[in-house]
Image 1 (cartoon, protein in one colour):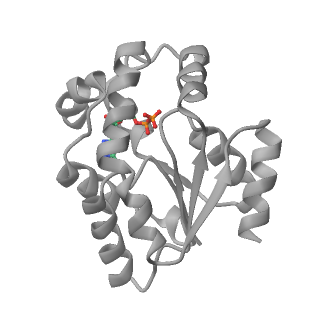
Image 2: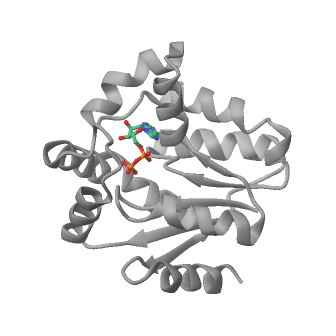
Length: 184
Ligand code: ADP
């Protein structure tokens, strides 16, 4: 099963992904986590993307697609994956679809978490993870980038009839229950 967890920054994708990993026994592929790990370890990729993440902008599609198609070849993803933070542009979605298609696979479910903008900002500011992109100014940029470049990915998958919209407001358990019910 290949699942995309979708939604704006602060919607709770990472939190719900953690719960899904153990419940569905699927691996998690978070492009944001991979970038942050590379930045921490000062790899070539990390050096290339540091200033982009810091500004709250998007890493170029080519770089992201190369990273994901490389990662997804690993044995641990053979039964499926939970994508988190990817695809973030229509171009990335098209490349992902083509890659999966080539391997006899597809996106089975696209779960989008809806949360009002005010709540998103509060959540990010209060999560206190010390991320350099979690300042009010950068959150504004990330939300703008989300509206301009990422939201169209929703319409892309809507056409493919795989979209499941979830109310992302509530307790972690309530939201997870909603996810389980749309996936059952
Ligand atoms: P959030 O959803 O809270 O903004 P992520 O961890 O998903 O956090 O992403 C953090 C940053 O990593 C993004 O602002 C962007 O710079 C970069 N990034 C992550 N995934 C992608 C992607 N698929 N395409 C382009 N840039 C990405």
